[in-house]
Image (cartoon, rainbow over all chains, first blue to last red; front, side):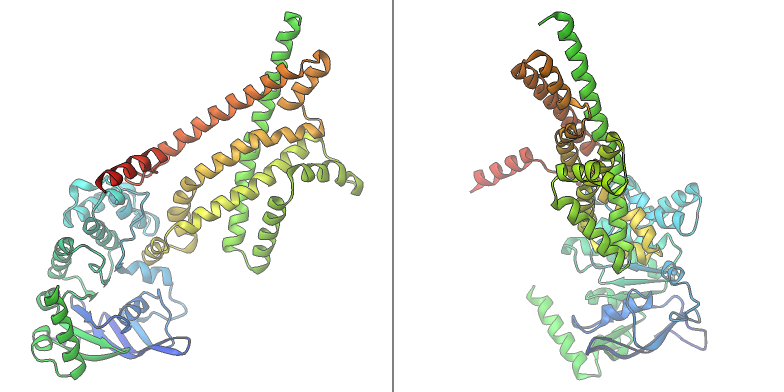
Length: 255
Length: 236
């Protein structure tokens, strides 16, 4: 784990609780993320890890606890929720580019509409971002003319175009064909190396080992264990973590 | 038949046809506006607006166009609202068209995947911005084929306004027959004119659909499907 010192955290999640009707999805999750850190979240499906991520930019409401981004509570009634969402980039599991816009238009739409960026500047930055995700030559393609991996990379560029404070990734490679996973992960790795603050929900343990500052294992709506990736993968402290990793590894070997 | 009267008949039919086209186009444009208003009421309005909108659509689609025309033209004067025949025709045709178009537009909007809207919202767009920038541009494209169908229907159904004495194509033909007693030729000619108009607009609609198609998601027509099915059959 990096030296986390006394710096002001970028994201501070305190005792987050959420229920859908009777069933409690999140049972008090606390987590602190500093600028430039990469946190990988793993856990079985239905563990609440996606829901938890979606609470950060208020795509989901929560009933208890608090989330503070750059010192401000996301449930502060005076906070402009749209501004919050503009400051938090999010990449989803399913590709959700706007099909009637080219790759470049997908990237420039929000900066022009929300940040009121002039067209020339938005397009210049958009082209730089597409080049960064390796799609410089495909700016005028429409989503249906791109592969799943390319679409996901445009999606990353689309989020980056808003100059986000942090990036959330909700299983960004889960819906991709195996041969397309690598290109998306390498873009994410590059982002991490450039110092972007990232929270990544994923099943890609290789990525977690290589890129994460620390790994959080969530099960049953609680953080069961969090640690340095090497520590967590080689010597998990909790029985449930061990069981999950063992099951996960045997599954991936079977494939 | 005298040649001059024949020419006069042709001119009269052409004039009738132009009124048929004009009425249909007007009802398409005004009906389009009605449709957008209805869909906005159903999408963004409160409980009451939603109920009103769906009730209006239900009534307009659930009653015959001819009865609606009679009701407004003959019925409203009884409560003191007297409107000119053209005004009645335009209002009734537009509302009728609007009801059908609103259903087409609603279907199109509902077919846009929620994940795109979520993507837009996560970038910081408001509901209204997401609707305007992401949903409507796609929904309107999807509305082109059903709207074209509805418009072509309207070209024919507008013949009903002959019943409130508007000299469109059908009434013009009837009027010519009252002078010539040549029902067969005249109605045949009128039918041919309808066919030419509807065929022309079918082509225009097809062109428009192709023109506005999103690259990579071009609509597969029956010919494509046939080719694909043949391929699969040959593999089997």
